[in-house]
Image 1 (cartoon, rainbow, N blue to C red):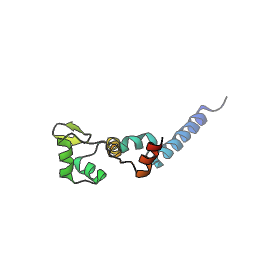
Image 2: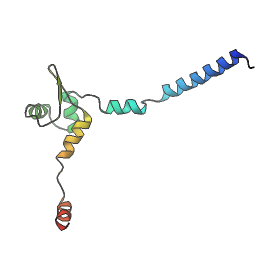
Image 3: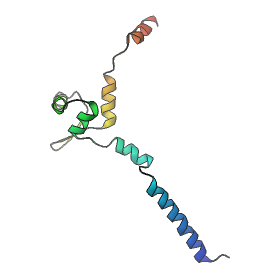
Image 4: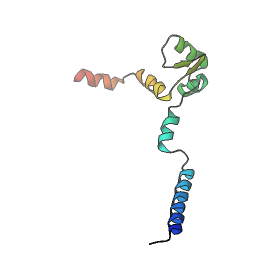
Length: 102
């Protein structure tokens, strides 16, 4: 039977190595996904979609842009803003011609 203190020491060293690896990983994958979809402020959303803040407020008041409201604050999600931008995509002439031929 091996020395229990050696076993404990080996396990502690293994745990220490794992912790050091985690420490050096800047953003783990699951946290990166959450950070990409973290709520944006009005200013952040305006910067993200390259519009002025008053334009964002106008879109919100007409309910033309996806948003959440908590109290008096507005929040936006990057995924929803990206999808909103993509819904405004216009087809190219080549794409329209291809559809007509089919």
